[in-house]
Image (spheres, one colour):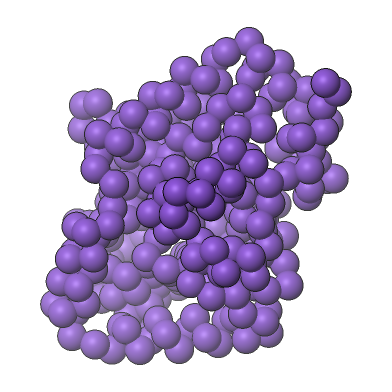
Length: 278
């Protein structure tokens, strides 16, 4: 397997590929990062070589992946479209393809994973997070939209109906302990133990015969992943809602206050989306 891209740093050791998001302090899902993720996923599908497990993490201690870059929606959608066929021009369908790569994927989360960043983590097979500083959220309802890249499908299956509605319609932040309690993630671990735990698990799985691991993943995916039609429907609804005047106004006001920039608004986005005069 060969892979080299500017916004993702990789290192392969003993069958474990560490893929570190390095696209600026927020790791926004814009055209460049999506393009590199598409390239990585294509490689994992077509020529994984010695890779048995992928650990996806972030170069930023504060942001695993903040969310999509709302200034580049057409551009990152065009890049995501390169991963699929006709009718699959959406980030959601690309992440659906990520969920089906023939290797095990682990999201190791420090910092904030919201919106599309949370959906990126959810597309991985497992999520382990720092108890001290990981934050998860789907804030889209606070702007007038909804999660359009798989968040609804994954959270409804993981959390159940009532908790999924709380997480999605409430648009608030969840710390790692509550996310673990709700079933959003596998485990919350002390930050000092996170790297070692994930590395040991990844190497353990990488040491097993790959045919059995791949067959187990396919069987679980067949039972639990959403049908493509449902993912496409969410993506279409997201595109429709973000064009509404009220949604555009709320996003513009959030942008004025610091959305997509390092600072208080991004740090406390779950609070910021609800802080609008009535």
